[in-house]
Amino acid sequence: MAKRDPNKTARNRMIGTLKEKLRELLPKVLADSGFENEQSLNAKIGSRNDDFFDLQNDVINSQEQFVSKWLEGLKESALNDGVVSDLSLWKKIKAKKSLKEYTILFLKRSYLKHFEELSKNRPPIESAELWIGQQNANYGLLVTPRFKDGKWENDKSEIRAFSNAYWTIGHVMKTGLVIPGKEKIFKFNDIEQYLLFFQDTLVRNSGSNHEYEIAGHYCDYVRASDTPELIPLLIPEFRYAGLATKHVYRLDFLIINPYTLDKVGFELSPWSTHGYLGKLQGLTQKAINEMAADNFAKEIRKHRAYFKQHEVFCLIYTDDDLKNPKKLFKEEILPFLQTEKPQNQLSFQILDEFFED
DNA sequence: TTCGCTAGTTAACAGCGCGG
DNA sequence: CCGCGCTGTTAACTAGCGAA
Image (cartoon, rainbow, N blue to C red; front, side, top):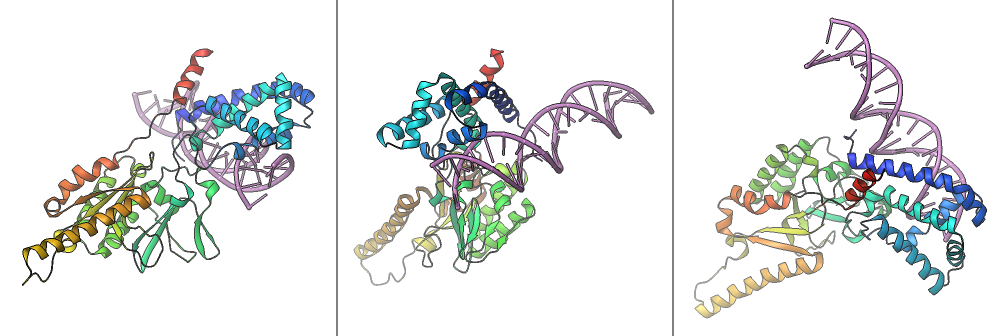
C-alpha cells in the first residue's frame, strides 16, 4: 500500500475532531429541528451538495469557501427558486441556532472528507477521454473507463475520485488502454512493459525516426525517476477528431499537465514531409511562392484548429531542431514533464489547527 | 546498534441505507 | 439513477521494546 501522507493524516485527525463535536451537538439538534435521527439529518444536508455545487468541475480551495457557497445555494434555491424542501430547511437553519452550528460543522467536515477531489482541477467529462494511434490500431485513454452499450465511456461521478495524477504514467498503469468498441483493455503489469509498448508499438508504427528517438529519451527519463508514476505521459499520435474515422490530423506528441490540465502539443515537421514542393520545373518564381505560401497556410490552419477545438498549444520543430533529438527532448520537452503538485492553502489551515490547542 | 516481534493506528475499500 | 455518510474489514505502516 502507498506510503502514508502526513497531510492526509492531519486531515483525518481534523475530521475525527469534527465528528466528536457533531455527536455532542446531535441530541439538542434533533430535539430542536424535529429530524428523526442522525442518518436522516446528515443525508438531508449532504444530499444537497450535488445541487449547490458542480461537483464535477468546481474547484474549491477552503472550508470557508465550501460552506459559504453551500449556504448561498440553499438560500437561492429556497427563496428564488421556491424549492419547498429547501425553504423548510432554510427556515429551520435560520430559526435554530443549534442546527445552524451543526450544519456549518458538518459542511466543514464534508469538505475535508472530499478535499482531494474538490481542490484539484479535474478534466471535464468531454475531455476525460482521448484516442491515440493509427486508423486500425487505436487505443483509448480514459480516466474511469466503463463499457456500456458497445462503447467505452467514463463513469463521470468517479472522475474526481480518481486517485492518480491525471494523464500520467500512474494513470495509464491504473486504467490501461481500452480497445474501441470491444470490452477489452490493454493492461500493463509494470512500467517497463508500458514503455516498451509505447516506444516499440505505438510510436514505431507511426514510422518517424525522430519520434522513435524522442520516445526513447522519454523512456530513459521515466526509468531513471524515483516517482515515475507522477510523470506526465508523452501521448503519441493524438487523434484530434477522436474516434471519428476520418481524422484530419494527428498530433505527434501531446503532454497534459496533471495539475493545471494545460495541453501542449509537439509537432515534428521536417520539410520533406510537411513543406516539400513537388514538380517545380517550369513554374515561375511567383507560382512557387504561391505554392509555398499555400503549404504554409495549411500548416497554420492545422495548428489553429488544434488550439480552438482542444485548447492545445502547439510547438513546431523543423529540420534544424530535428538534427539533435536528444537536445530537443532535453530543452523543449523535458520542462513540460517536470511538474509539481501545487500546495493548497489547507496546509496552512492545518498548521493553524496545530497551534490552536 | 540492529534485528524481530507485537500492538496500535490508519488508508483504502466495500456494503448499506438515506434523500432527491 | 446519483451522491452522500456511516460502519466494519483488511492490510500497510509505525512505535515501542527486548534480545543479541
